[in-house]
Image 1 (tube, rainbow, N blue to C red):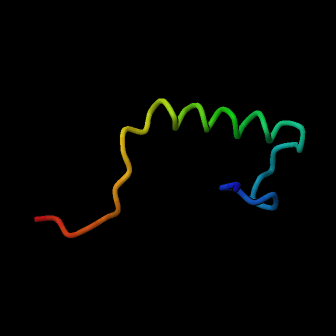
Image 2 (image 1 turned 60 degrees about the horizontal axis):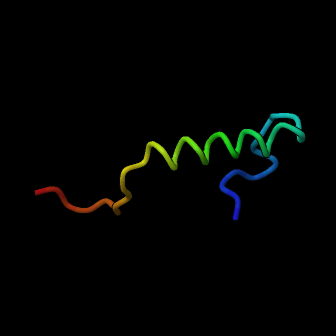
Length: 41
């Protein structure tokens, strides 16, 4: 599964996998949790 379609990216094709790996590493280290939005009390 990819989160960016090929037509949305302007990087040269050879650089795209490197950028995806950079974002994967960033999110793996920075995201502490994911929760669906809900009503705030």
